[in-house]
Length: 404
Image (cartoon, rainbow, N blue to C red):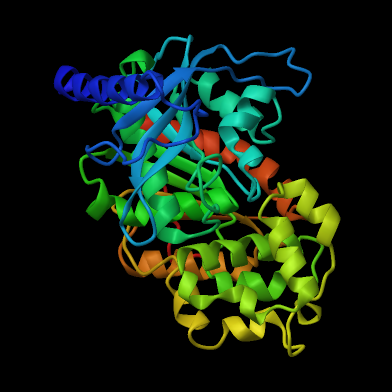
């Protein structure tokens, strides 16, 4: 066990950051404003933390039975440069009745939007996080839970939506932060798992791939990845003119922020530039309502679709960097996807599962037949819970490679 040395270092870093904010003459700062420069430290070190809340309902009648800490921690962006990311650590009051130390699940949320007000840590505190019931279900099973805000949600800069490296780093470093936060009271070297659906499924899958090289010390027992947007080129074609075309806008903002040399706004006409600026501040429901069924060809200077541009250089290479499946997770993986998903094409997840199987990964691929992307998430809940319980219980991971 390394609880004392690591947590002492984390506490020292957090104390320095807080003192800097409180120093005479220092301007008032939001919790989400990182210190400049960032403090020295390791990926996952806690920069600051404060007590928070988690309401399961928007009326704020049901508070989760857990201790809640909002955190800011060190992580890495697309290009491996240090950044500050915020999130939430939840320690259930319920005892852990399984064998060994209490597990930690890093939960990667689905599409929240691009605006700073869309940060999951803010939504959890307000009772507006639509994945709150699943997170509450993890807590009732006695798991510690950490939920990252990802890069740029709440913190300065645009959110790097569906960006493979940035999201994977944020999910893994969130576990490290939860382990190192003394106030959370969670084991610093116990079993961990990753879970997520949709954008969160992509973040979970990316983290599982990155973990052997980026965070090998984590005792990762498995990763649940639902409706993974594994191939963004395929997802973009499906979203063009779709009711959720705003999600394509989120992805373009992300791509432009991570790779500013692409200068995506230069492709856009006046209407396109207006949409681009609007989605930078919108959350999921706002974007769906404002931009449903927009054809991207009406947004460009030359009338070509944005998906056509994404298939050409220099855009194609950057989109290809986000594809999941090139690396090999070392832990078992559960992929759940509805064949009737209307947002993330089903075939790409079947291909992802087959690719991982070919690399020797223990994959359980589960197909459902419920309509829509949203109902697919609800259908996956009980299966994901049961699968995670099996991994923490030390049971052999189910594998159906060759059968899908």
